[in-house]
Length: 257
Image (tube, rainbow, N blue to C red; front, side):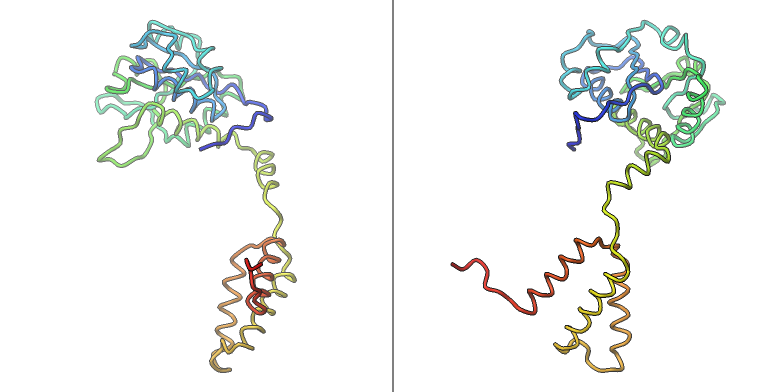
C-alpha cells in the first residue's frame, strides 16, 4: 500500500529490535520496512545465517535503508542486549518456564512509558523456523503475546515485527497526533443543511408517489431521516446529493453532441 510522503519528517528511535539468527535477507529487509513504518530505526542482528550486508535485504526494505545501514551485528544475544535495561520477547510463552506475559498492546504502553523515563529497552524476535529458545529467553523480562488463531498462530518474521511495531506506534499516538489526524477530515455539515436536504427529498418523493398513504408516511419519513442522520455528511457531500436529486427531477441528455 503506497503511503510514502517525502515532505514529512521521518520518525526515528523506538526500542531496539533484535532479530535473533534470522535466516533470510529478505525477511530482514521486510522487517526493516515494518520498523520504519512504525517509527523504529534501531535494529540489531544476532548471527544472521546469510552474509551481511545483504543485497536481498536492501531490495526487500523498499527504501528503509536507513534502518539497515545503522543495523549492528552481534555474535550472541548477550552482546545485543548488554547495554539494555529492559528486554521483551515476541514469542509464545514456553510451558516449562514461568515468565511474565503481556499482550502486545499492554506491552507497547509499558515500553513507551519506560522509554519516556529514559529506560533503554529492546524486543527479541526469533528465527523464522524455530523461534526463540529457552536459552534466549533467559535474557528477557517479559514475553509479548500476540493473540491469534490457536490452530495457526505462526507468523512471518516481518509480520511479527509489524504487529508489535503498530501497537508501539499507536501507543505513541498522543492527543496532539489524534487532533492532527482528525483535522485532515472535512468538518460535518450543520443539522440545518442536513434537514434542508431531507425535507427536499421527502417533498420530491411525495410528489412522485413514494409514500403509499398518509398512515405510512410518518414511519417511512423517519426511516429516511435515520438513514441520513447516520451518514455524517460534509457540506460538499450534501451539495452532491442535491445535484443528484436535481438531475433525477430534471434529467438532461448527457453525452450527446
